[in-house]
Length: 346
Image (cartoon, rainbow, N blue to C red; front, side, top):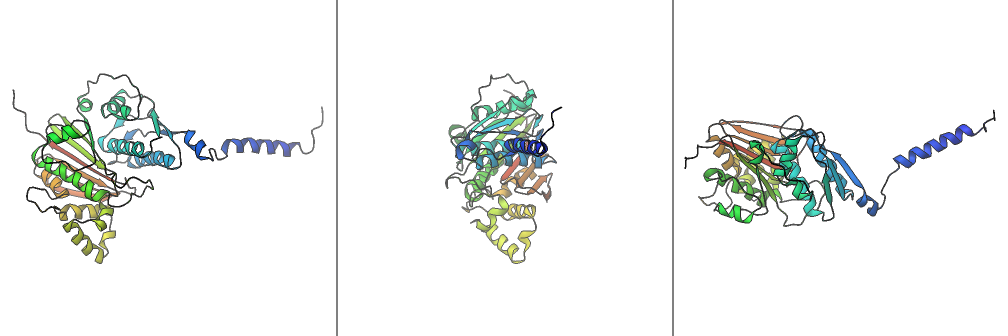
């Protein structure tokens, strides 16, 4: 047998090290390479930001956002593990993707068809496939809790007449949005327009000064009306120091003097609900977030949930609960659910 050179082991180790380095070395060191590389992101099993899976959803969204910030312009979302889409997590995900597509014209987002058929039907119903330009054969949906969902997006505050929503904004809002609930809805849009985008969002993505979108899902199902509203601004707690709302400003100044503004986002949300006042001081206007909670408390069986940054607040059956999470959603989600009166027979 031929005797191996004395430095054979050293050269073999060197070849092995070079092979590993070629695999692990930083790729796409130029902007062109980064843009051409496809970044794959595995979606969580369940989309919800008001449960124990909240961090999984936040991590998933942040991974996509960070890839885009780092120059990647091709995103592939893998839905193979996803089995359930809850409205709170779904609207946050949808809004984040829509925002990225709005602000990065060269960005291409693609996805596989979820193995779970109901998940795929939800993505179809909310227009996600259409938004990313994915050609999918439209499937017939027989699930009442899917087919009744409607989606809307806007950049302004709506007028007093309901038909403006149908005529001016994307999607169709459930016709049951009337009276006090509609007043609360317009106030949510007003808060988004005047407060949510009052400062730069902490995610490091620059957007035009007049970019102040809100997104909304609505559904009428089994005698219950559900509305989920989302904005991707600085969040209620972070907007308070900049707010021109008279009630918020006075209350926040008092809190700041005693250092109580550092007690957590949930306490700030609770205070904002109790102390918000109308900016116009007109009697036909609501009182901001207070309008939403009062509407729900006046409706037996209704529930309102406000999620903003790390904090959450819930009003149900006249009772209120609130607390903080460790992670922030970097925005605000307001969810209503209330029973509807029986419709008169035609």
